Amino acid sequence: MPPDQRVPLASRYGRGIVAATALGSGIAFLDGSVVNVALPAIRRDLGGGLTAQQWVVSAYLLTLSSLLLLGGALGDRFGRRRVYVIGLAGFSLASLACGIAPTTSALIGARVIQGVAGALLVPGSLALIDASIDHPDRGRAVGMWAGLSGVSSALGPFVGGWLIDVASWRWVFLINLPLAVAAVWATLRYVPESRDPAAAGLDLYGAGLVTAGLAGSVYALIEVPAHGWSAASVVAVVLGAAGLLLIVPVEERQPHPMVPIQIFRSRQFDGVQLTTFVVYAAISGGLFLVPLQLQETLHYSALEAGLALIPMTVITLLLSPRMGALGQRIGPRLPMTIGPLILAVGVALLSRINPGGTYAVAVLPGVLVTAVGLSVTVAPLTAAVFASVPDEQAGVASGVNNAVARVAGLLAVAVLPVVAGISTAGGGLARGFDRAMYISAAIAALGGIVAWFTVRAGAPMLQQPHPALSYACADPCTRDESRRSLADATVDSLS
View (cartoon, helix red, strand yellow):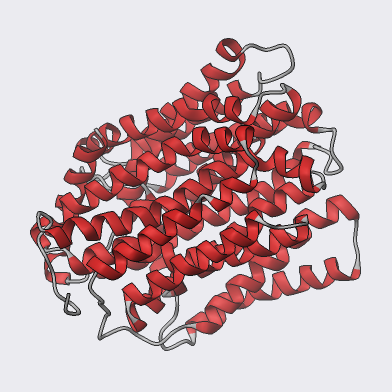
């Protein structure tokens, strides 16, 4: 196809574009949903305690969250298809390195590269649909994409658990290779190249400061509790603090900043980001520990642990569109207040996952209530992100919200075990698990309080998909119409 040519969804190329982008995003979603289930098997094979397990998760989240906005800007400037294919190739090679890693250090290094590739891959998925599908069909196209991507998230724990039990944890990463090959083939065959001729310069200073700030902080948060202070820890703290403190003054002087500082002058936008941070910190920290508790303390197999959490994904997929419709009628404030409170109850119920507890009594109630809380919260929260900024900043707002959610998960994985008193040397998970769940529950409840005081009750607004599905129209004159059709199509596809 010629560059910058749009096609109808019903055409062969339109369906191919959706398939190519859904395959690529599905790889990232699948990887995110199965790695936690694989952590105990990785520990048994490669050694290392809780600290190593934290780094297996955090190394990926660190580079992904730091470089997401830069990855989107690279696609706009150098070609979205080109950057997307590079991301797919890099993700598959990094997955191969993860699958054959001989040591924990090698696995963590490969996860760092996987996060870099993911930062090129994730933003490009929806950008390609935006740039390649005819305007009237883009809502339906993104709805199809959302449904197909949601299937990979729902099947991830089951598939991952099965692979770990019948083969090895290594196949959790190696399964990405054939999927990536199929995605590259479909992208090169069906997806036209596109770029933004008005794309601004790249803010490498901002990207470097964010990466340095997060890397230094997370290193210290994970390593100091495990091994005490060292020269490396002191350097990490100084580097992290300097990076985080310099972001604002440096970005204010950049001609094309990665994140325009002016966007944070909206109290509504700031309140939504703070709510996002708190809610995702609560759920990410809790769900990092739950699969470990199920396998290491209750002696579930990897497959059983994956199956135990499937109701959460299924309920979220089924209920979120309906909550989005409710938010459209009543506005975001009430759902964003009630949802985190329900989530807090669910996470607190997960504290009952202790030796001797049955699935029906100790696990399932917490899983179900947590799923309801997430469903009530997420769609109105994402809609509030878009409603809090002008249309021309919708893409930046979406990227910031996605990055905030991932940074929250990154910090929660690093901090929660320490605060809860879980031993990083191993053997202390059962003692601190219930305390960790109560802390996560309190954080989730705080999210509801923050939303009540910072989010306007406002008029009813358009529902939007999960932050991972957020979308920005390339053509400002049609953005409002396409966002409306996007919301409708997403609801239809996930119902």
